[in-house]
Image 1: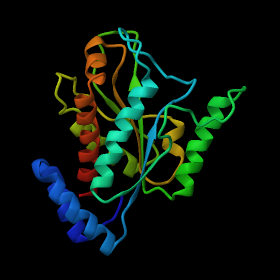
Image 2: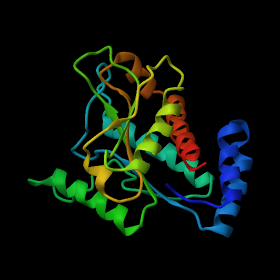
Image 3: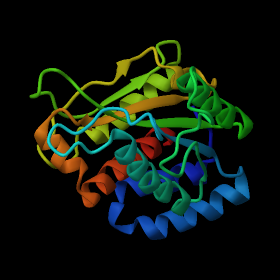
Image 4: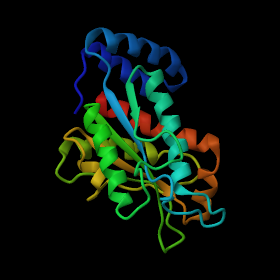
Length: 228
C-alpha cells in the first residue's frame, strides 16, 4: 500500500467525501504531497492499440483500444489535477510493438513492462473492456494478482466505486486474475474491465464521453479511498 503523511491522508480522503470541491482539495493535495513526501507515480495502461484492437462493440463495432485510450486520458487528468506523477504506457492509437511481425503482442507487453519499471511505478492501472458470449452480462470487474495483498485491497476499493456508476450497471466483485500487466511490478496493480462491449446497454454507455468521464472518476475515487 502507498504510504503518505497524515496531512496527505486527510486531504485525499476529503477528495472522496467532497467530490463537488475536488478542484480545491486536489490543489491542496498537490502542494502537500510535493512538500512532504513527493508525489506518487501512477502508471495508466490503455490496453491494446494499433493492429491489436481488442474486442469490438456489438452494435457499433467501436474498438476496445479506442475506448481504453479515451478512459485512460480522462483518468490521467484526474490524477494530474490531484498532484500525482502520471505516466501513460501509450497516449496515441498506436501500439507499442514496433514491428507487426510475428511476436508483436509479446513485444507490446514487454514494452509496457519496461515503461513501468523505468518510472519506478507506485501503482499500475490497466484499462480494458470486457466481452462475453452471454449478451446480458454487464458491469465492471476489477482484477488483481492473487499473490498481492495490496493489489487485492486496491481492486476492492476501485470495485466499490465502479459498482456505484450510473446507468443501471450490475454490481460485481473484484477478482483474482492471471494477467501479465498485474505482474510487472511489486507495487499494487489492477486491471479494470470497465464494461462489456458485448452488451448493447454497456456499449452505448461506453460510447458516451460523459460516461467515460464517470468511469475515470470512479477509478480515481477508488484509488484515493485505498490510500486513505
